[in-house]
Length: 163
Image (cartoon, rainbow, N blue to C red; front, side, top):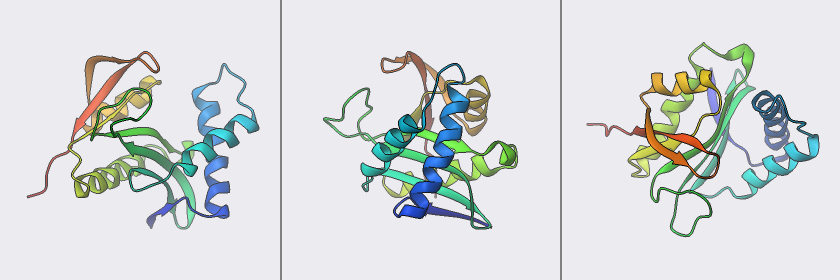
């Protein structure tokens, strides 16, 4: 059974940091990602949690198998922004649980949350080609716009309103 859990206590934070370490090292295999870097980045994401910044773990049978971190851009946010739109900063599924529909389930959960908040678009950038393929299968389009924060193309998804 799948369940989403806010990262809001020591146990969930430790689970998040552990998974974030695996994720960052997977993304940056040519860089030395230290435990200190993982701790600092994970803590900075969770410390900024608010109704407009959401960090959750995905649990399968009470065991964490993934996480996401997202925000709804606001006027005055630093870096590249699309005011009123949702930016998926990070999304990860453990390697052993990939290609089983959990990433799609997580994205559907995100869409439902954003629809309830009145958000019409979700955007992100993707470093890995496998990830880009996943996002395109979810309905994202690759735009001609390049994110100045990381020099990667912006992928954009329009949230469909339920009838």
